[in-house]
Length: 301
Image (cartoon, rainbow, N blue to C red; front, side):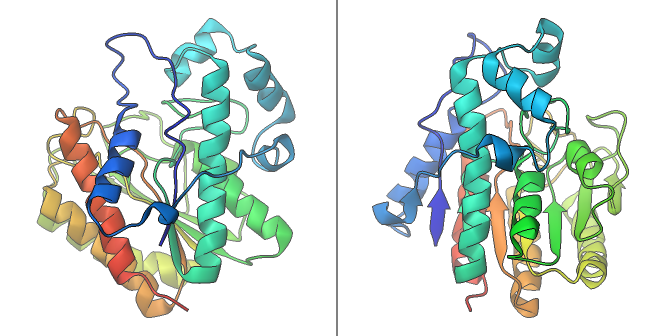
């Protein structure tokens, strides 16, 4: 299974910043140390170029990000101070999801060990997201004729508002999001299938809602590719999550998604999305378990 990483491109964040940038390098180290993956399984992706990004983002926004012309207010909404490293990492992370999707179409499954930047809109970034990797990937593969239909299964605890906005009029991409009703973003966008959950939602309730709506999403989307945003932040120990899932519940969540892809013989590309556990080791362990399960359970053509 091919794993694409961009953790060598590190954002220079101020001390005490709440974004756990180090989780990405720790995830790669954990997977390599597990013995399930060889060094050759880890690949550095190409950066997404302007033309590719422009399939989902306004050219003026791309240019202003690249030139460092975002205002202080725009940077505050994103949550990161501008830097050249931020631009490079954002391009590489988007490129990683695109590379994972291309690989999945050939091999059945692949993963971006970062990504899931679903709060980025066509003309702006929000919530630690600069470019929208899922939207860019779907639109690029559609433009090339590599796929005719796609399904985005977004199980980050926060609604994929940017994704829903960018793809609102793209009937070939179906957006399915299960997220906390009372969590960020506090003004939700309308996706194709949105399932809002109450604070404290437990394993049993979450999994029952997922099983029901996952079948519906697949039936409506009839996808030739699934992008799975496997956020670790529905975890009960997450600082920004507000739901009540256990690590075992999250793994069963992953199993439901991957088994549905396998049963329907649909390739799947994974992205890690959010994870802000009080102990970073918990976030890393949840992400690592997702990737390890994907290696075991994905459909292979």
